[in-house]
Image (tube, rainbow, N blue to C red):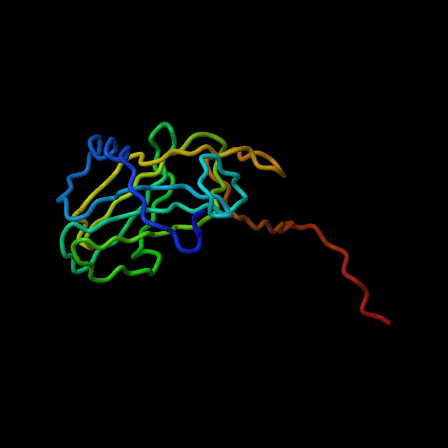
Length: 179
């Protein structure tokens, strides 16, 4: 049984399909070997509840020495609309110098308050100047389920919102200050 707090490196031969379809030019100094989707208990899943924490786990291997790099993920709708992207630099998790042969496992954990439907995850390894060492399109796919509680999401994403009502010209009763 796998220790989910100390994940082991995994290669997935099917990610090569995404590499062949990738529209980005890559220099080949690293390889994304696997992309997994994990539920709140860090177990593999393909179905996500929008209110639960979800982890995108990227397994990357360096094929050459790299002074600095970042690993990125991109979530897209089934229709190809980019929904969300982030990377280790943006999340203040620098990878620093890496040597040829080094392997790294990165966990991006978030809630996905998205409209029910099918989505895919792309992943890349790049230098700070955007020289892509590797890019895998649609490395894994997942489905967002209708929320367990509350209303279904009408738009693409449900954003945390605060509403204040400011009534123009309407007097509100104020509590009396007398004792």
